[in-house]
Image 1 (cartoon, one colour):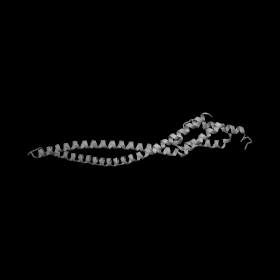
Image 2 (cartoon, helix red, strand yellow):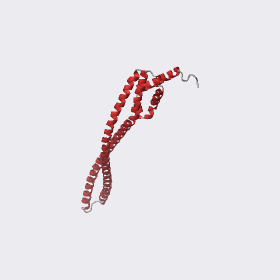
Image 3 (cartoon, one colour):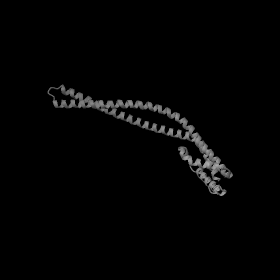
Image 4 (cartoon, helix red, strand yellow):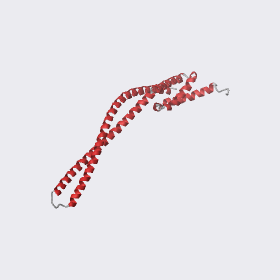
Length: 218
Protein backbone atom coordinates (compact mmCIF):
# COMPACT_ATOMS: atom_id res chain seq x y z
CA UNK A 1 0.00 0.00 0.00
CA UNK A 2 1.52 3.32 -1.03
CA UNK A 3 2.08 6.00 1.57
CA UNK A 4 -0.07 8.58 -0.23
CA UNK A 5 -3.11 6.38 -0.85
CA UNK A 6 -5.11 8.29 1.74
CA UNK A 7 -3.44 11.66 1.26
CA UNK A 8 -5.66 14.77 1.18
CA UNK A 9 -5.04 15.27 -2.52
CA UNK A 10 -6.09 11.71 -3.34
CA UNK A 11 -9.21 11.96 -1.22
CA UNK A 12 -10.06 15.36 -2.67
CA UNK A 13 -9.82 14.02 -6.21
CA UNK A 14 -11.96 11.03 -5.28
CA UNK A 15 -14.56 13.27 -3.64
CA UNK A 16 -14.67 15.59 -6.64
CA UNK A 17 -15.09 12.65 -9.01
CA UNK A 18 -17.89 11.11 -6.96
CA UNK A 19 -19.60 14.47 -6.50
CA UNK A 20 -19.47 15.02 -10.26
CA UNK A 21 -20.92 11.55 -10.87
CA UNK A 22 -23.72 12.10 -8.36
CA UNK A 23 -24.52 15.52 -9.78
CA UNK A 24 -24.72 14.11 -13.30
CA UNK A 25 -27.06 11.34 -12.15
CA UNK A 26 -29.33 13.72 -10.23
CA UNK A 27 -29.52 16.12 -13.17
CA UNK A 28 -30.33 13.23 -15.50
CA UNK A 29 -33.48 11.13 -15.82
CA UNK A 30 -33.85 8.71 -12.90
CA UNK A 31 -37.13 7.21 -14.14
CA UNK A 32 -35.16 4.20 -15.41
CA UNK A 33 -34.44 3.34 -11.77
CA UNK A 34 -38.17 3.07 -11.09
CA UNK A 35 -38.71 0.81 -14.09
CA UNK A 36 -35.81 -1.49 -13.16
CA UNK A 37 -34.23 -1.17 -9.73
CA UNK A 38 -31.13 -3.01 -10.98
CA UNK A 39 -30.36 0.05 -13.10
CA UNK A 40 -30.27 2.19 -9.95
CA UNK A 41 -27.29 0.33 -8.46
CA UNK A 42 -24.60 2.69 -9.87
CA UNK A 43 -26.53 5.61 -8.34
CA UNK A 44 -26.74 3.83 -4.99
CA UNK A 45 -23.03 2.92 -5.05
CA UNK A 46 -22.01 6.55 -5.57
CA UNK A 47 -24.17 7.58 -2.61
CA UNK A 48 -22.62 4.87 -0.40
CA UNK A 49 -19.09 5.92 -1.35
CA UNK A 50 -19.76 9.59 -0.71
CA UNK A 51 -21.42 8.76 2.61
CA UNK A 52 -18.10 7.28 3.78
CA UNK A 53 -16.39 10.52 2.78
CA UNK A 54 -19.03 12.85 4.23
CA UNK A 55 -16.52 14.61 6.47
CA UNK A 56 -14.67 15.82 3.37
CA UNK A 57 -17.73 17.35 1.73
CA UNK A 58 -18.49 21.05 1.51
CA UNK A 59 -21.86 22.23 2.89
CA UNK A 60 -23.37 22.30 -0.62
CA UNK A 61 -22.00 18.86 -1.42
CA UNK A 62 -23.30 17.48 1.88
CA UNK A 63 -26.72 18.98 1.13
CA UNK A 64 -26.72 17.35 -2.31
CA UNK A 65 -25.81 14.01 -0.72
CA UNK A 66 -28.70 14.37 1.74
CA UNK A 67 -31.08 15.07 -1.15
CA UNK A 68 -29.70 12.05 -3.00
CA UNK A 69 -30.36 9.93 0.10
CA UNK A 70 -33.98 11.13 0.01
CA UNK A 71 -34.20 10.08 -3.65
CA UNK A 72 -32.70 6.73 -2.70
CA UNK A 73 -35.27 6.16 0.04
CA UNK A 74 -38.12 6.98 -2.33
CA UNK A 75 -36.74 4.55 -4.92
CA UNK A 76 -36.42 1.76 -2.37
CA UNK A 77 -39.68 2.36 -0.50
CA UNK A 78 -42.04 3.44 -3.29
CA UNK A 79 -40.34 2.54 -6.57
CA UNK A 80 -41.29 -1.18 -6.63
CA UNK A 81 -44.93 -0.42 -5.79
CA UNK A 82 -45.19 2.29 -8.46
CA UNK A 83 -43.55 0.10 -11.08
CA UNK A 84 -45.71 -2.91 -10.20
CA UNK A 85 -48.98 -0.96 -10.30
CA UNK A 86 -48.18 0.80 -13.58
CA UNK A 87 -47.08 -2.43 -15.26
CA UNK A 88 -50.10 -4.29 -13.88
CA UNK A 89 -52.48 -1.61 -15.13
CA UNK A 90 -50.83 -1.56 -18.56
CA UNK A 91 -51.08 -5.35 -18.81
CA UNK A 92 -54.76 -5.35 -17.84
CA UNK A 93 -55.56 -2.61 -20.36
CA UNK A 94 -53.70 -4.54 -23.04
CA UNK A 95 -55.68 -7.69 -22.22
CA UNK A 96 -58.94 -5.71 -22.20
CA UNK A 97 -58.11 -4.28 -25.62
CA UNK A 98 -57.42 -7.76 -26.99
CA UNK A 99 -60.67 -9.11 -25.50
CA UNK A 100 -62.67 -6.24 -27.03
CA UNK A 101 -61.05 -6.87 -30.39
CA UNK A 102 -61.79 -10.60 -30.19
CA UNK A 103 -65.38 -9.90 -29.12
CA UNK A 104 -65.82 -7.73 -32.20
CA UNK A 105 -64.37 -10.46 -34.45
CA UNK A 106 -66.65 -13.13 -32.96
CA UNK A 107 -69.72 -10.92 -33.39
CA UNK A 108 -68.73 -10.24 -37.01
CA UNK A 109 -68.34 -14.00 -37.57
CA UNK A 110 -71.80 -14.56 -36.09
CA UNK A 111 -73.30 -11.95 -38.42
CA UNK A 112 -71.64 -13.63 -41.40
CA UNK A 113 -72.82 -17.13 -40.44
CA UNK A 114 -76.32 -15.83 -39.70
CA UNK A 115 -76.48 -14.14 -43.11
CA UNK A 116 -75.17 -17.27 -44.83
CA UNK A 117 -77.76 -19.38 -43.01
CA UNK A 118 -80.58 -17.12 -44.16
CA UNK A 119 -79.39 -17.38 -47.77
CA UNK A 120 -78.93 -21.16 -47.58
CA UNK A 121 -82.33 -21.69 -45.94
CA UNK A 122 -84.04 -19.59 -48.61
CA UNK A 123 -82.31 -21.60 -51.32
CA UNK A 124 -83.23 -24.88 -49.64
CA UNK A 125 -86.87 -23.81 -49.47
CA UNK A 126 -86.80 -22.99 -53.18
CA UNK A 127 -85.11 -26.33 -54.00
CA UNK A 128 -87.65 -28.31 -51.94
CA UNK A 129 -90.53 -26.50 -53.63
CA UNK A 130 -89.05 -27.10 -57.08
CA UNK A 131 -88.43 -30.74 -56.24
CA UNK A 132 -92.01 -31.24 -55.01
CA UNK A 133 -93.33 -29.54 -58.14
CA UNK A 134 -91.26 -31.79 -60.43
CA UNK A 135 -92.19 -34.96 -58.57
CA UNK A 136 -95.89 -34.11 -58.80
CA UNK A 137 -95.68 -33.98 -62.58
CA UNK A 138 -95.79 -37.30 -64.42
CA UNK A 139 -92.97 -37.80 -66.85
CA UNK A 140 -90.76 -35.14 -65.27
CA UNK A 141 -87.09 -35.28 -66.19
CA UNK A 142 -85.27 -37.65 -63.82
CA UNK A 143 -81.98 -35.75 -64.34
CA UNK A 144 -83.54 -32.58 -62.92
CA UNK A 145 -84.93 -34.47 -59.93
CA UNK A 146 -81.53 -36.06 -59.24
CA UNK A 147 -79.81 -32.67 -59.50
CA UNK A 148 -82.29 -31.04 -57.12
CA UNK A 149 -81.96 -33.89 -54.61
CA UNK A 150 -78.18 -33.56 -54.77
CA UNK A 151 -78.41 -29.82 -54.20
CA UNK A 152 -80.80 -30.38 -51.30
CA UNK A 153 -78.25 -32.69 -49.65
CA UNK A 154 -75.46 -30.16 -50.22
CA UNK A 155 -77.55 -27.38 -48.73
CA UNK A 156 -78.39 -29.55 -45.72
CA UNK A 157 -74.68 -30.14 -45.11
CA UNK A 158 -73.80 -26.44 -45.53
CA UNK A 159 -76.65 -25.37 -43.24
CA UNK A 160 -75.54 -27.86 -40.58
CA UNK A 161 -71.94 -26.66 -40.82
CA UNK A 162 -72.86 -22.98 -40.47
CA UNK A 163 -75.28 -23.72 -37.62
CA UNK A 164 -72.51 -25.61 -35.80
CA UNK A 165 -70.14 -22.66 -36.30
CA UNK A 166 -72.79 -20.20 -35.17
CA UNK A 167 -73.55 -22.20 -32.01
CA UNK A 168 -69.83 -22.45 -31.19
CA UNK A 169 -69.31 -18.73 -31.72
CA UNK A 170 -72.31 -17.99 -29.52
CA UNK A 171 -70.86 -20.15 -26.74
CA UNK A 172 -67.46 -18.52 -27.16
CA UNK A 173 -69.05 -15.08 -27.00
CA UNK A 174 -70.81 -16.01 -23.76
CA UNK A 175 -67.51 -17.07 -22.20
CA UNK A 176 -65.79 -13.93 -23.44
CA UNK A 177 -68.55 -11.65 -22.15
CA UNK A 178 -68.26 -13.24 -18.69
CA UNK A 179 -64.48 -12.87 -18.79
CA UNK A 180 -64.89 -9.28 -19.92
CA UNK A 181 -67.12 -8.58 -16.91
CA UNK A 182 -64.52 -10.07 -14.56
CA UNK A 183 -61.84 -8.05 -16.30
CA UNK A 184 -63.79 -4.81 -15.84
CA UNK A 185 -63.97 -5.51 -12.10
CA UNK A 186 -60.21 -6.05 -12.03
CA UNK A 187 -59.69 -2.86 -14.03
CA UNK A 188 -61.76 -0.89 -11.49
CA UNK A 189 -59.63 -2.29 -8.68
CA UNK A 190 -56.45 -1.57 -10.64
CA UNK A 191 -57.62 2.00 -11.24
CA UNK A 192 -57.71 2.65 -7.50
CA UNK A 193 -54.24 1.15 -7.05
CA UNK A 194 -52.98 3.13 -10.04
CA UNK A 195 -54.21 6.39 -8.50
CA UNK A 196 -52.25 5.59 -5.35
CA UNK A 197 -49.21 4.74 -7.47
CA UNK A 198 -49.51 8.00 -9.39
CA UNK A 199 -49.64 9.94 -6.11
CA UNK A 200 -46.48 8.19 -4.93
CA UNK A 201 -44.89 8.77 -8.34
CA UNK A 202 -45.67 12.49 -8.08
CA UNK A 203 -44.12 12.57 -4.60
CA UNK A 204 -41.03 10.77 -5.93
CA UNK A 205 -40.78 13.27 -8.77
CA UNK A 206 -40.99 16.17 -6.32
CA UNK A 207 -38.13 14.67 -4.29
CA UNK A 208 -36.05 14.17 -7.46
CA UNK A 209 -36.80 17.74 -8.62
CA UNK A 210 -35.73 19.15 -5.26
CA UNK A 211 -32.50 17.13 -5.43
CA UNK A 212 -31.92 18.41 -8.97
CA UNK A 213 -32.17 22.03 -7.79
CA UNK A 214 -29.66 21.32 -5.03
CA UNK A 215 -27.32 19.55 -7.47
CA UNK A 216 -27.23 22.62 -9.72
CA UNK A 217 -25.74 24.62 -6.84
CA UNK A 218 -22.75 22.26 -6.58
